Amino acid sequence: MPLALQSRVVVSDEQVHTSLGDEAVILGLGDGVYYGLDAVGARVWALLAAPRLVSEIVEAVREEFEVGRERCEHDVLVLLGELAERRLIREESDAGEGHAAVS
Image (tube, rainbow, N blue to C red; front, side):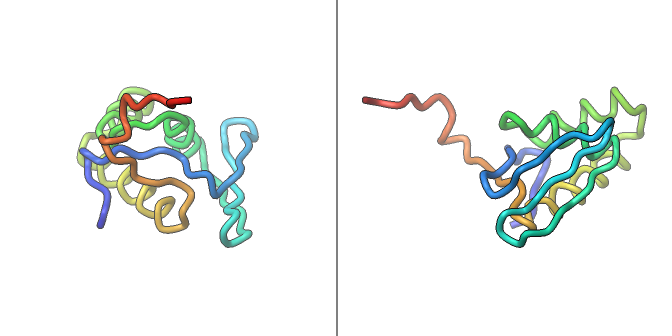
């Protein structure tokens, strides 16, 4: 199912990444392919360190890069869709929120 503004997304465990200046490089562990993100993509990637709603990511990008809402929503959804397709990010259900580990 495609991601929507209400989707909650986070980086997956199937990748390793590093920052190079204002860009990011990600290695997909499933396919062994390196992916590069420009400054805007790297900022989106940084926001994905913790689970976030796509709408929160869009707002952060809009404020930081001064881009129109429609264009920003489209571009962020396309980027996140590509990252999800490559299993570099995953959608997280709201049911996982607030759970505690029991020992």
